[in-house]
Image 1: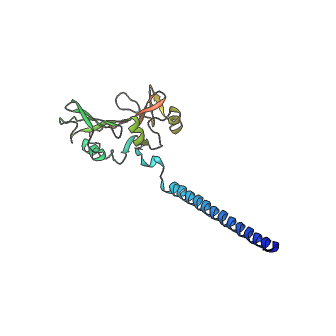
Image 2: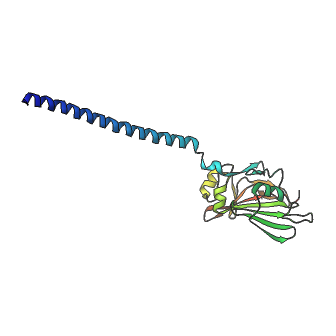
Image 3: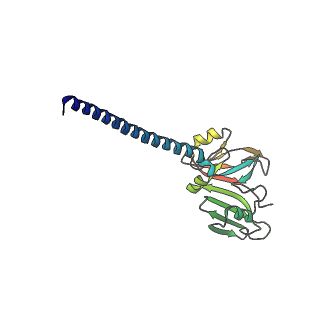
Length: 212
């Protein structure tokens, strides 16, 4: 085999190897490009599909100087014991302090409701009405927020930034304070935030529906 033939074969072989290298490199580029495209598509889909975490939280909605909704419960329309059961399901626990005074707990929601019944019936029954609602703990943080987005566990700084008009009374902030002439008069709020260790520990919702 002549030198020229060997040179020709070597040249052809080199071209073939270069071509294969280009093919392999191109193949890798295609694979890498496909992987990147798939990752970007997944990320974009996640951004579009996944809602804000707050979207899952139940909202405490205020209408002027009173609570309108506690999650999906239209409490300003009905603050009865029966309405609370329809809204939250059966309570995890109930305790009577007297026939006309009881409390019920929903651990999974971080909710405690105080009921009274001045008609002579049992408070934790259809005749009972909500006096106040307390929301606290990790379950409360994971389940609830105010209309402006305040949650259990948020700092006092965040509270004051969201509610610059909040009024402090001892260890509690009245989020939407207003003056009430009832009794001897005083400041009140549809939602109050009790503070512990410089963080929101409990939401207090005074409903006072026992006289309905």
